[in-house]
Image (cartoon, rainbow, N blue to C red; front, side, top):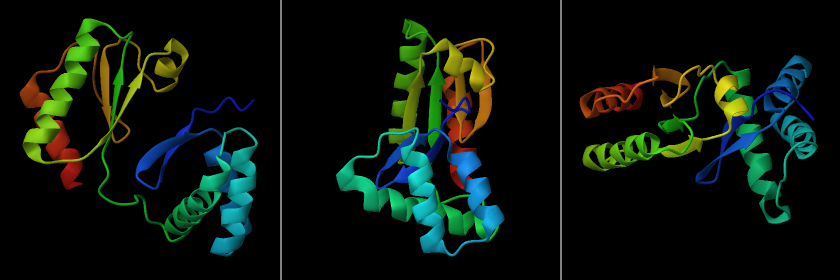
Length: 162
């Protein structure tokens, strides 16, 4: 199985972690395929290491094609989605951090995908050395301590604005 950590892609309204997305995307970009050919090639590659429900194949194909086109044209992001990741062992502190994030997002009127990562290997793959930790849109904001609500709010505002 592929050792690279999963990369997240927005499929419909959900962010899905896909193992092997980056190497497959690099191969497609190197071949300079059209969007349809790239989407099909990416889908076949992704299905080797990931479960793709039969009823969702077209959604995956469309999302992979759109991501390919974004990268082919040098665009970095698919929009204004926030990805918030909480890393830890599932302890009270991690639960409190997640609860604070929900409260702050609701107060700010922001939407975000929130991912809780408990597996130690996955935590380390993300560059986290000391849980609890918080990552927003791929950037580690804190680790080894509980951030204050005002810090969390500031980080979320900055991420939403960029």
